[in-house]
Structure formats: structure tokens, C-alpha cells
Image 1 (cartoon, rainbow, N blue to C red):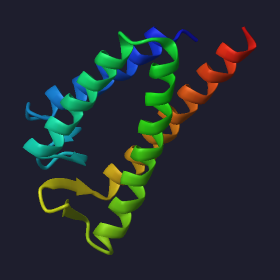
Image 2 (image 1 turned 135 degrees about the vertical axis):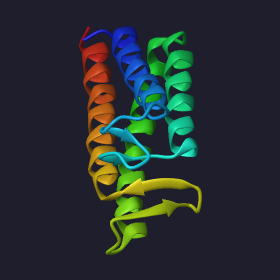
Image 3 (image 1 turned 120 degrees about the vertical axis):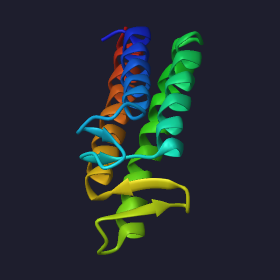
Image 4 (image 1 turned 60 degrees about the horizontal axis):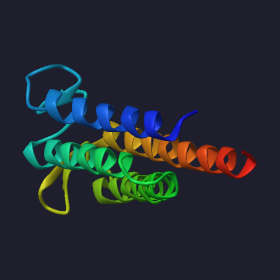
Length: 127
């Protein structure tokens, strides 16, 4: 697994989610399986930009970003469940629309991004 390619993968994934969220579709966006609004879509695009920026940094910075961002996203998923309570959807922090499934996705993404950083770090140390 290569650090730059992993960063590029996550950057493209978040950019795609952000852009797709603005286009009516059944998967991501308003009224979709994964509920988003303008602010939520912009968070995805800003996240993609951060991955692109860190992709141009040294390997250690990319790995640290993946670890920190992975933990952050895990936290976003947990907070999302707490914020929703028993509701099907809500406005996280008052402006980011989420639904129940978003929280599972955020936890899965956080785990995947954190695992990417940890695996890349282990591989770097073994090389």
C-alpha cells in the first residue's frame, strides 16, 4: 500500500461524495439513503481538499493526518448517534443534516481511514 495513492483514494472518495450530494440521486443528498445538505456536502469537499493537500506533504504527515482524521470521523459517527437519539434524521451542530445510516458510514470510514494510517505507518517502520 502506497501512502500517496491511499491519500489520493480517500481524496477522490470524499470529492465524489461531495459532488454527488449536489446532484439528485438515491444514494447521497437530500432525501437520499445517506442524507446530506449543502453544509454536509461542503464538509466532504473540504475533506477531499485536505487529503489532496496532505498528499503533497511528506509521508509521515500523510500518515498522521489519516490517523487523526480517522479518529475524528469515528467520533463524528458516535456523536451523530448521540445527537440523533431516537430520531431518523437531525441537524448535527445545527447545520449539517445527518441520518441514522450516515453514522454507520462515518464510523466505517473513520475505521478505514485510521486503519490505512496505521498500516502505512507499520509498513514505513518495517522498510
